[in-house]
Amino acid sequence: MKPAGEHIFRDETFVPRPRHETFAFFADAENLERITPPQLRFAIKSPVPIAMTAGTRIDYQLRLFGIPFTWRTLISTWQPDDVFVDEQLRGPYTQWIHTHRFFDAPGGTRVTDQVRYRLPFFPLGEVGYPLVRRQVRKIFEFRGARMKELLG
Image (cartoon, rainbow, N blue to C red; front, side, top):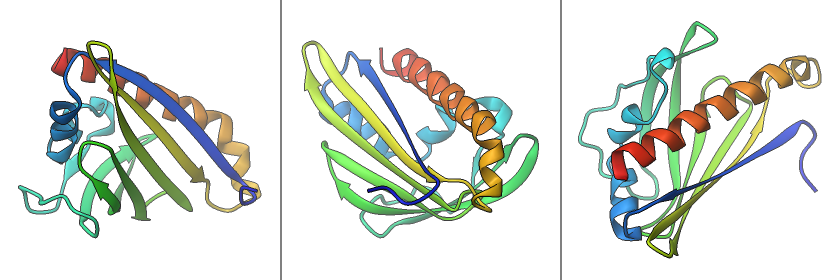
C-alpha cells in the first residue's frame, strides 16, 4: 500500500545503443544537464567529475515554475548496466524516488523510469497535483527525445 499522497509516474524510452553504453551515458552526471529542458535552468553545483556509486550525493540548482531552488540527490542504489536509484534529500518534494532500469532490447536498450513522489503540505498541496503531473510528463517527454537524439 502506498503512503497517502504518493504519486507514481512511469516512462519508457528505447535507444539504439547497447545497454552498457546507455548506462555509461547516465553514469556521467554531467549528461543530466543535456537531457533536462532548458527552461529548468538545471546546473550541477557539486564538483565534477562525480564518481557515481551508492552513497554519492549530488547538489543541483534549477527552476521549477520559475522559482529557483536547490536539490540534493542521494544515489541510493547503483548496479552498473542494470539499475540505479536517486532519492531527493533536499528539494521541492516531500518525496522523490526515481528508479532507472536498463534492459536489453532488440537493436538497443529499453530504459524505464519510475518516480514515486509526494507533494509538500499534504493534503493541501494536492491541489497542485494536476499541474505537477503535467510538468513531470513534459520533462520526461523532453528527456526521452533528447536521449534518442544524443544516443540514436
